[in-house]
Image (cartoon, rainbow, N blue to C red):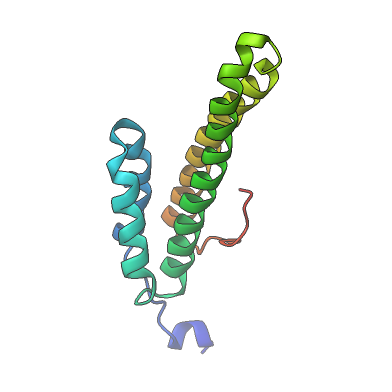
Length: 132
């Protein structure tokens, strides 16, 4: 007999990490569920198994990186808006808007990739990376 036949495979519950990803995606409509998903990820990360813990870590980092980059884009937009009246702030304004848009796309892609690995029953391969 092989070890695989003797050792049963332990399946972790996929519901709560999926709820976190769903709340993140729902957050684009109301804004509040971003924070609810973040709180759920923080509360459940320590008690989770290795697969779910990687998804919670990934979700937490996704939130904080998105907030940081969104704030950078927002500050550039706020700084560039009054200067655009003098035409010198237009590049800064456009860059800020582009950063905020890119952060939104990046956030959605990371959530979809997290859901993809979760449905396959796999841990997220690089939960601490800032790329996808």
